[in-house]
Amino acid sequence: QVQLVESGGGLVQPGGSLRLSCTASRNIFSLYAMAWYRQTPGKERELVATLAQFNSGPVTIYPDSVRGRFTISADNAKNTVYLQMDKLKPEDAAVYFCNTKPATLPWGRGTEVIVSP
Image (tube, rainbow, N blue to C red; front, side, top):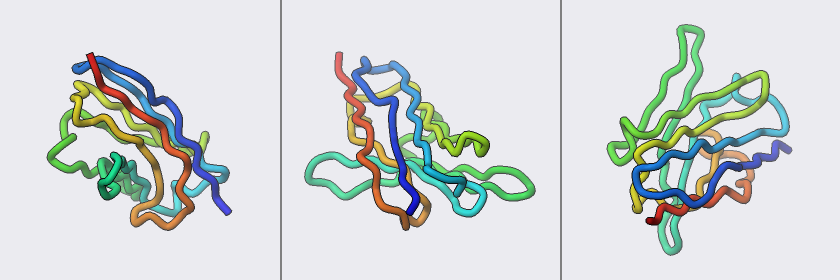
């Protein structure tokens, strides 16, 4: 079964940047759309970025809350999907996970992002 391992989280000041990584145990990115999700205590997991790769090129989708600040990308050779997060806000603080879109794989442990002065 495919395993997902997220990394790159940490403490950052408002306005700062972080780059998250998610590595899969085997190549799945050519088969599925990939996505980043985030979750805060007591709330539903929220979709924050989607990447679908077509022969004509990649397609990315973002909700209004992160559009223009977050960028999803992938390195198929490394079985890794990234989330570049810029201009971070306190409300971006959460545990971030990657998965397919829709989510079909076992969830990894996620990586925690803390946004605080």
